[in-house]
Picture 1 (cartoon, rainbow, N blue to C red):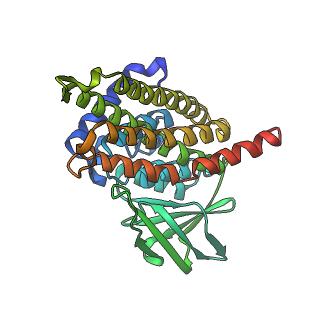
Picture 2 (picture 1 turned 90 degrees about the horizontal axis):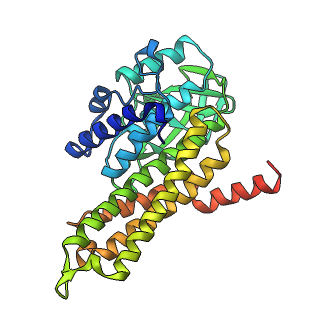
Picture 3 (picture 1 turned 135 degrees about the horizontal axis):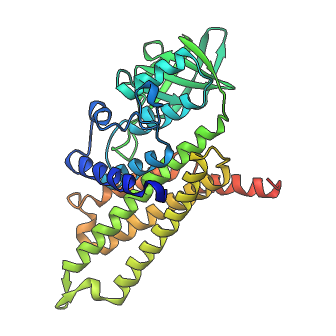
Length: 332
């Protein structure tokens, strides 16, 4: 996920993100704004950094490594992605500026709603970071309806992964504040969501491998570190291979999306493989930690539950493979 021309900047961004999350694994919105993460892909003229999804992907990977609880996915990554796909307008620019400056928090709803004149009706589940968002960006056909959260019912939706903030959103003839039209391909937003979760899974898999290698070096059995046992070495090697394959798939897909290309196939491949691999890596980490790996204190359960939810969000591996097979069968 690194362009050689910007490798030094990317290293600095990765390091800074890792250090911030090491201090605070549940940064609030103001911390994300101060770090400049919310405005990474917002144009400079609107107060952002004018960066691309490549830089956003680096931050997402570090968030996954920390298993951090934040509003970054829904209120920055998806919100900025949706707004950048819209036709230029004062309304769109105001929303982008608000994300970069932290004046407002947004959430994105991809489906489940219909527009009737100036009102919105529908229901959606598993909406990232909708609780606490001031406005909702609701995709409806070739447009995005901007709705004040006070016009709809937003309820927190408990899931197995407590580090994610998901919600159900219900609207019954809610008033629409603005209706913005797409200038780009709306499908790109779905691919962005898939890759965002894949990057998160890559980061958490990396952390699980690091924690496991550190542990097997110091845990002794029969008078020697368990890391010296052949079976443990093979298990760690398998984890590393899975991570490196996921990294390559994600890097390719992120590059395509950042360049504005059709990321349908690479995003599906990256999402399917990386999220499945993360579940397997976290599971192996728990096994290799032995009895302590199953305890609450070890913290491995946090990563395993997050990996499991990531695997299901925005299309399961089975759904992604089905979509790929359909495209190949049609010769797309």
